[in-house]
Length: 128
Image (cartoon, rainbow, N blue to C red; front, side):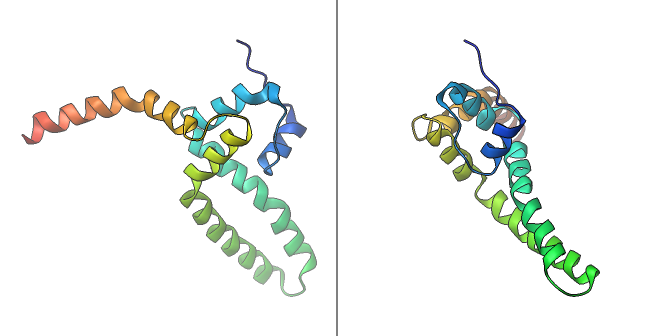
């Protein structure tokens, strides 16, 4: 099975919320389930915020420092929301790529199960 990775322009489209052709289906599942899946989603959120922030800094009148602080404050709030909805957003991306609802979470669960079970055993041994 060959996983096709999108080029820079398609990735940018994907990061902005666009769908990818069916041949990238496996890559999307990998993207939302790999070890760094949450970090990847936060990076996509930053990519979405940058053009808006640049436009606000350039087009809104006022002192530069006020505009920059306002954009940074808005970006901070946006990132808090992005972190809050990271599971739902990645699940939506996988469904959009053609995977069943819950598939991404199931893949992540399966991958982390041995580590969680080992941690539970260590906890039981220590605090029993």
